[in-house]
Amino acid sequence: MDISSRGVENFLRHNHDAVLSTIRLNGATQLSVITVGFLKGGAIFTTTKSRAKFVNLNRTPECSLLISNSNWRPYLVLEGKAIIFSEDTTDPKTLKNILRTAYRSAAGKEHPNWQNYDEAMKKDGRVAILVTGENIYGTIEN
Image (cartoon, rainbow, N blue to C red; front, top):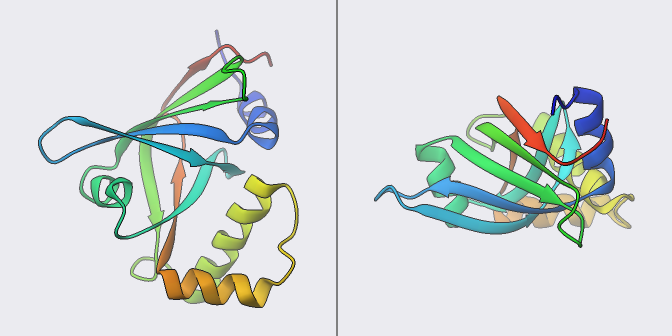
């Protein structure tokens, strides 16, 4: 099935449950359950630098991301490379905006106190990770 970028966007706007597959140092697969939102044609989520998913993606950006609704049908898979937005790679204002966008998109609403959110993101050392699909497949309808 050929899935359009519009189909990906529509699906990600309404489905946020996901399983991320990354590659461990020993070559084994690491799976992580995450919540995603939509940004720039792909799925975005946040994590901290201490998590295995960050360590793995920082070393080897190739990954797969399965996004589904709570019934596991329909589903969408994005296979590609992760782009990491962190204080090491992104200017502070842009990072703040990307982290806010990740929240808005995944939660489907505004945060009740953006100042508290921004402080928590900074304190936790949060990063945003964007996965766009070089290979996209699934059971969604366009």
